[in-house]
Length: 88
Image 1 (cartoon, rainbow, N blue to C red):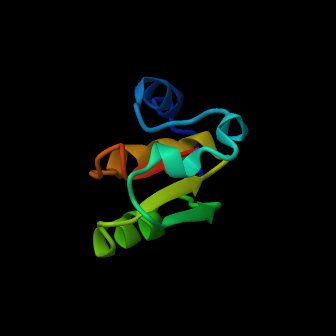
Image 2 (image 1 turned 90 degrees about the horizontal axis):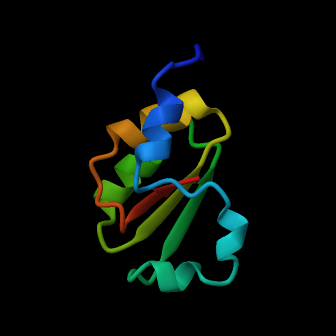
């Protein structure tokens, strides 16, 4: 994937990014009101997590992506409230 110039700035301004997820170890259930939490590691542009979040509105999703450009695109494409889907 090509580097997307705006991705890092977008992620820094986004309310849905957690840079150090290990800091929340043991407290993920408290962060979400939903009963189930799903994690996708290597989410790419986030299509799978976004579609699953639409199918299961009562559940929460954590999408992990190390490529900043892909993570930026995923976060920008997300129309979910930040309380339901988180990008790491």
